[in-house]
Image (cartoon, rainbow, N blue to C red; front, side, top):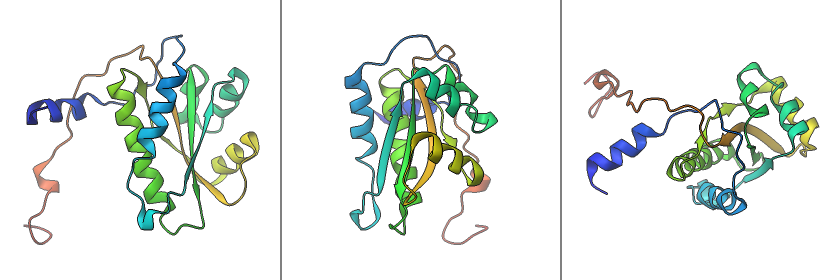
Length: 168
């Protein structure tokens, strides 16, 4: 892959919020998990765990924990990203794993969207999926075959890049 193809791939990875009614193969879900767990991890703690939700009723309940997660009800799967809070870097590690998951989904022709979870939404997810208290809930990632195709783009802005010191 040359430079333009690499940048093109990253620019094509977009948040997808509408999905076809088409199942995802189990081997593709496994590949997403392998890609997620290939992420870097502070002290190699690998604090991540994942709940793949495919049950319709559970997806509908998940979609109601926050208005921005509504698309989970229609997605073939919703992947809940958890992190063991005993690791000081669990949020960083799980964020890296989530990005790997999103990139792998794009490579497979799947669409996905990162829906961050915080505060009271976390407790709702925890109760719904019986998640032990030792885990934090970082995100819900609805995933499926896209029913929309956002245009590729970069959000590069040279004024956000500094050289050697801030403001240069």
